[in-house]
Image (cartoon, rainbow, N blue to C red; front, top):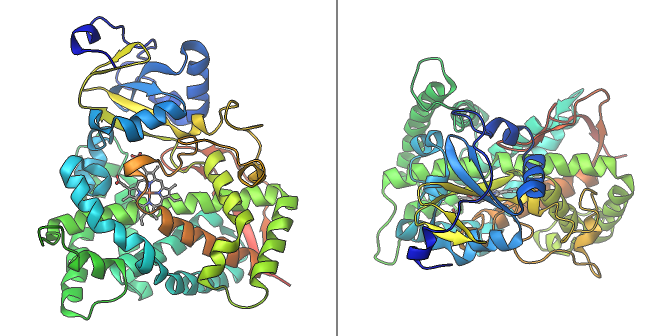
Length: 444
Ligand code: HEM
């Protein structure tokens, strides 16, 4: 870092603006990894571009991740990193706020997704997983991405909103999908018939439904779930969330905790199908630790290969390719001036493929995370981000993914159907193009 007088003399990073209005957004959306690798070869680890309507500096590598996500947080705004559609539709939920407001909300929300409360969600996650697995086995074929999405939504609707009845879940789910379909839709103008306008109307319906759910819960006995926690938790001044804060937080939790888990589960199943030897070892681990008895919560901590498979899936297929931050104060980095008002991007997908950090980074190789290799270094694996704003749902997501994969693999056979397009759609949430078409049958 240099003094502000000298800062003005530093050059901007190299790079180009791309096309009018869209800049280089199309190339980035098409293939975020190639986009970053090509420019890294041309310019090095710091360069400028124009993405999603903003001038943007991309900072690559584990040290850049540490700078953005941990040591220099005060230079950045998370809210200003997200586009206008999300901030206008979701309002001021946890990922869209900064500073003291963020600290207060995070302290209040975090206990609902960790420790003793998290352990109480195990039975619900497991029961819903069993119910969905039974349904999937009866279908001739299914798109696994959609199937995991339905299960993730059912888990979120039960634990975040207390919804159990299929009809009530289906109503909220319909509105929610229309709502999330507009979160990245530009322009963010309410022109009838556009995805943004539909998302806005769905958002209004969702907020009305959430108000009714909250009012009913206030009259009922508290339950061991996220909604009861958020309704009663107090900050250090004894203040609870206002209703407006609560609505925004519920929307952000439903959104952030849903497609991400769906994406990682889908890629994990696909990679296991492509690597039968690893799948067989995982099956043996599940048999040895779980036997034929029902899965118990403590056993989830004794499945090192399952964890390594999930980490390797996070590395090769991070649900989001990276993250954006708004620059609130100009600063220098690597000899360049990064101006206030621009955005910066850290690239998970780039760091996850760096040959300086990972051996044969393009290969699916879960053993890299097990002893004696233990590959990686701080801020190198950042699929859940890192630092003080690391994904607040990390432990929740890990528990859910471990349960779903363990139950799926020990009770079912998953057959991939032929003639399908498995190339990735990387943005906004990574998924195989055809959604991974499979047939699921009981394990003999
Ligand atoms: C595989 C599953 C998941 C992945 C890969 C994931 C990934 C991420 C990432 C990368 C961020 C940081 C985004 C940024 O840099 O701006 C984040 C933040 C966040 N995630 Fe997750 N997430 C997952 C599951 C969940 C779940 C299950 C929940 C809720 C139950 C959740 C709630 C959140 C929230 C609220 C934030 C904002 C945290 C803050 O700014 O303090 N996520 N997540």
